[in-house]
Length: 623
Image 1 (cartoon, rainbow, N blue to C red):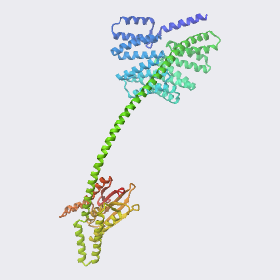
Image 2: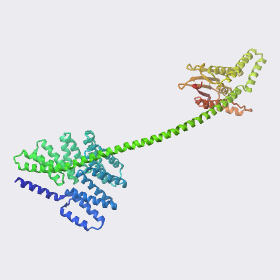
Image 3: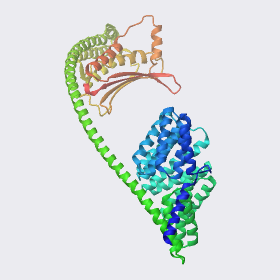
């Protein structure tokens, strides 16, 4: 009796697999396949043959004949490549990848998927690129290589947000239903549950906003799987039911329906609700049998056997035990094939990685030796060039140093003559003579004493390029005092030295500041008609070890002084300022310093000129 029942069950299975519903609602049988074979032999054009081959591919897929599916897909792909039928090529290649995955031939599946991806990128077809990426991610998922899914999912994400789609429907179907669910599944496989939940919920929200029932079903079943693993039974049951509802509205994706029905059956069994568990298990068994989902079919049969074991009638328990055993044997054989192919792939990949690593080591060694040879030759040439350049530079520097030294001596002599110009000496002697005529012998003697001391200091300082700051200050005081005597104390002055400045140890170029002081007195202060006339000279040392000398007056300003000079009948030419500028320029060139002079026009609150400030900065390092 049992043997007859088993035989009947096997025959029923064969008959059911000979006639299966297809996506568009029609059925296909072996008789229809034979008819397509006859049409293929009679067809003369490659276009017609390609169309018939693709129908044979779909028929083989629906009948579960993987070998025929692969054979027809290869022939269709060859014709599609020959005549550049892009649509036919994409379909044929997709069925080939599915066949390879179904039989566990993952290396061939990945190779074909990446070939499809490269071709799609060459023709810039975003839809086919996304389809190829889906095949790559599905294959890595079958191999449980979850980390490899993420970069390809991110690639799909970038394409989606770039927006290269023909219409909104294409965007819904091809784009948003893909990468977020794949990312969530990858994180779930990597046991990063928080990230998995985030992307699964994001996928559901996106599908809701797009009102896309297929992607809603995919997202809902993904969340149901997640909550089943985390033992959140109420949430899992809710999402299982939601996925069933979305499948019903979408009109396809029976694979999701089979999984959801099985999930609900298991939950009802845990809640000790055997009638509901049996109902959903039967639904899952029928659905998975119809679409050849062997894993869900075997699990449903095993669950039904377990549920009927506790019931008085044992015939049903035995029936489902027999079916479960048969299905598990088929599943075991298929999984063994997949496992064997997976081991072969991993071993081939390991050997390939070893070979690539050895090749890289050899290439690195060869490249290193080549680089060392080039570097050695380059270093030798650089050394020769450096010594030749250094020798030429030393000679050039010696010539420049000698030239700069001669020019500095010339400028120093010009500066000395500018300080002792005949006009100044003539004025001094006239003043002395005026005091003698007025019988003001005391003032004349005082003036003459200061004049002789000034001449002596100028002659002493002119013998040296640099003099101590205190001697320079002494020279300035004598010069200013003589000008005060000449002009009857027409102005006041002050010289301030900051505490951090040591005048005895800091050296500056001799007679560098006298021309700026002279300019402040003659052109700034003496042209001022009313009010106080003041001259300030300050010395300070900055944090950068730079000596700063400031010559400031509250005279008429440079613009007014220039205007007054232009009205004079006799224009006197002064070389002092230009000579000082030339000296600073040559000092910078000779000693590689950054000495500089800045002149600033001062203004009062109303914007009127109220004097001039000259700032001379000399690095203390040159002293």
